[in-house]
Length: 319
Ligand code: NAP
Image (cartoon, rainbow, N blue to C red; front, side, top):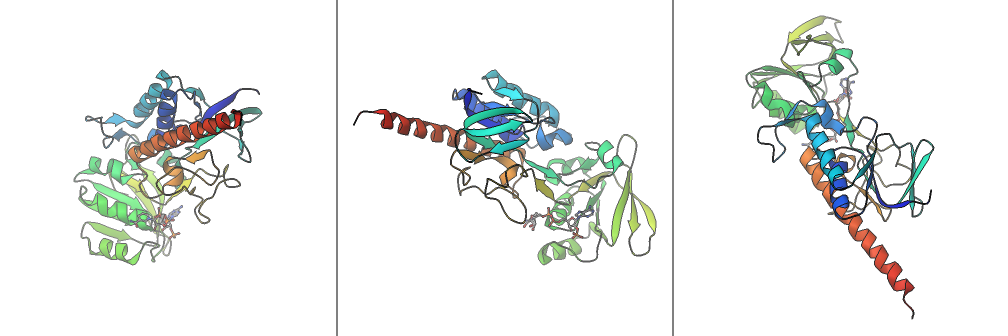
């Protein structure tokens, strides 16, 4: 293909669409390969009440449509499919969707992360109807209600502690006796009267037709099955960054797979390839921080491209 783009953005969540908006407004004609299931993690939340500028809250999927439409208004183009392969060995970089090859002088990777799911049919069905993967987003919907949190790492304990600001009771269900979380978090949870620890226990089912009404749990030592009344069910068993396509090319954390960017920048180890949003952030993981880093990546890509043009222009000058 002869058409070499200025920038290809891989991923259609808050980071990708914000990068698209900024690069489109900079006349860089971005192509967003947004994924078959575009929209990212906000597609499985209900109301988003913590995104500035939406004082009445907004449904996650509606907000993502708005993000997308805003980028489109300035000329961003979209391929609604999944990238299957990349080659970042030289510029122009190559990105494939099956047999279709796309080329660009710069690439912004914004493929996000996925919350790990338990894999229960009922968990899927009740997503946004009491099943949540983000306490910061959804805890306030459970004022004076009973909430169950599953997991035994720092995320689960942090979420459980956060939810105690709203809920009347928080059941923390963990599959072992020992916690993976840091001792200080375990101490805090143990000392909090609103939190009840339910250990050596796994969740077998989330109960409820249209909304969560309870969870069915099994004690792994005794085999006893119990139904616990609950209004909210928070799954906090970790996140996985969507980085499998990039591991051969981009520096990443060995253990977790998160991409590594330079401090105060979205630059990766490959000049011209930038990473934005949850794919390189396991600390903040908010739509607004992802959008912010999408903006940073767009500005970084713009500067990179103009430096390249400047260099090419200087090289073309007679000595
Ligand atoms: P994590 O440390 O990987 O912990 C995941 C937890 O979920 C583990 O307790 C694990 O149980 C449990 N789990 C995994 N799959 C499960 C399943 N299918 N069913 C039931 N339980 C399951 O993940 P994380 O808590 O999200 O933390 C990720 C990283 O971020 C960690 O390095 C953590 O320290 C860090 N973090 C730090 C803070 C903080 O410092 N404030 C806050 C959040 C996260 P097992 O223990 O039995 O494997």
